[in-house]
Length: 267
Image 1 (cartoon, rainbow, N blue to C red):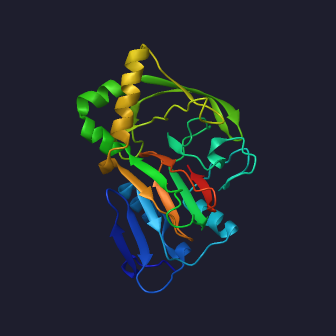
Image 2: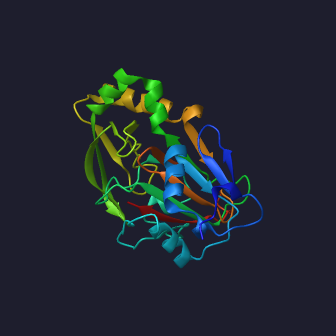
């Protein structure tokens, strides 16, 4: 039985995104039509599903699979995002995670990132996932600048540690595969003195000064308040983000605070 949209509340998030909750008590998340949810996520960029009956891990995987084919990594389909005592990848440290898009070094670029919050960080301890709506960035930059970005090739290099790494070159701006809107594909450089597995970013055809100007320009544009949303996690949240449209990262986590998310990629 499909849960009718009239039994839900939709609350807009500033500057973008939407929170969908049951209008009265709790409800079965799996009763929501995947095609409708996907449409909401694509339109809002970030869809927060809150207050629904909790899903176990197998139920969460089945929920994501109802959306479409799942991207399978070396570790499987589910990435457990928790702090490690002896991390090999900066994702499992409490430090900041700069902007990137998922699938840069994968066999395919996933359409949706689906996160499940098993345990939220303590209040005021950080750990928010930060999303940037790159369609808004492109709109603010203007058609002429976006066209220049379309011709700008950027190379990303990092040693493969855990599931992440490789050597790939991509245009800075491209087209969203389903909406046709311009979007950015960009990962911020990770300095060797600050990160376990640094990411080296080379703007092809640019000298050092030109590259520095571009990196600084992007930092200013991508962190502008009107294009950024930092999600404060609550236990049980399921967040669906349109990976074709957004970049994402993470604010640092307080050392004494737990944080456990699960992440699945839908192609």
